[in-house]
Length: 338
Image 1 (cartoon, helix red, strand yellow):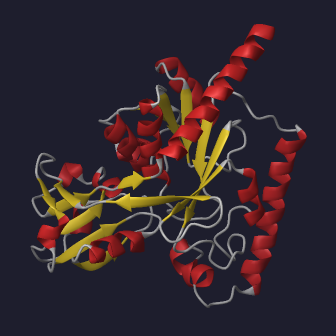
Image 2 (spheres, one colour):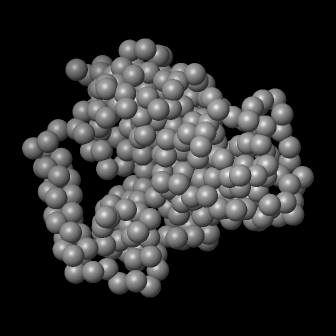
């Protein structure tokens, strides 16, 4: 069975991809190129919305930090006078059609990341397999002047005004092959087409914007008014639970803070049950904010969430906001001339 977990040694290690994986990668490349070409030629038309669209995504599979960046961008655009809303696919949820998400949303229905964004920012959020339909629903339900599409770089049916590609600064692009022989959804040449390249961790490359994820506080799942600095757990063994694209990043964060994590990686967007967090002892259980939204209903006193904050230079938010304002002005000019 092909899964990210089984393919990881091929993508990021010394294991060479089999002929079968290389053959599948050729098929994937051909289909992806055909689809993109249909949009570029105009045979398939992307829908342009009445407000600017900022797409956050990546060209590789796995967690690169898109959701923390989306949350930081919401705050950054608000601070510059804009009113952002968010659309998302809602991975891990089973909502039958586009729906608006609020802070009390059920992650099993609308997905874990949209609920985390809604709870962290209070911004209007809508999810749906059809991102155009989700966008129209959100624009009808809330007054926003810019839409942020979380994980939408390859969804060309929705026209975009600004593209932000997030890069894992530690793993970079692995063996640089296309899926499933490598982790790439699109060729590296795609990076030259985006407006901003954000490097999460590691050493940024040329023209890449540095981003770090800071998290030094543990928040009790049972009572969010209770929190403790991570340093108070220094030297302690803890269970570390992560159902994110790159669980190793979370485990390394805990080790860097001086904790001794017992690692429990789960597949991305795993639907947690209480039994998943029973380890036969009373050690603290640490998890990411994305996982915590799925565990609140059966939380107990052992469980703690370690939220992170994306740190980026103010100049990045200035530049994105300036592009959004320019796009808004251009829409107004076109509307006047019609």
